[in-house]
Length: 254
Image (tube, rainbow, N blue to C red):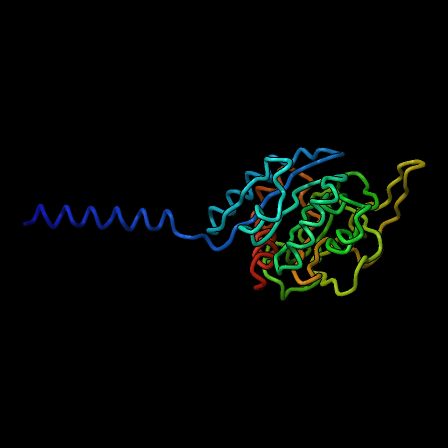
């Protein structure tokens, strides 16, 4: 009898383990890393970090590996699409329509760093991101500023945290209603940039946002300008910041 009970216990534990293994995750996000311009060294570190973030927080991260696989049927399984250091014109007209319908259906978007250096000729996408990249100075250490402490995931940036980054200067707002949550103190670094005939930058002044979120066209969009330096993807402060944005974009919950 004791052996029989022991066998039943083993079977029960195996069943519990298998049930937990196959339990439905909180949500699923599609990770897009396509580049048609500059290829960031941090993409590899970012992919690994986001996959680990998914494991730790019980959500699925699927890397888009099929260039022609961005279809409406395929996207039905996802609650958000994440653009990790994408650059240039990465979608054709049909894929752009798929993305627009995805957001209009109530789903979410997360843009990381050079997602703001992507698809300049797609007006709808410009509004989705909120502001587009213009220029940046050399990578430098600067002080961050929390602009909205009510948004989660910013605890690691308290007390003017020093952060080393490629500080983007952004153009004007492409849409109203952007909620700014994190900025950079321009007095703590040299914001000037000179790319010759291509562009020149003087910074954005006292209000230099680097992360924001907004509701757009039926869905949600979160953007952060952090993520150029590969080692940033091992920083708990940044990972918490990313997860808060992904969680909000995928679920609508703050």
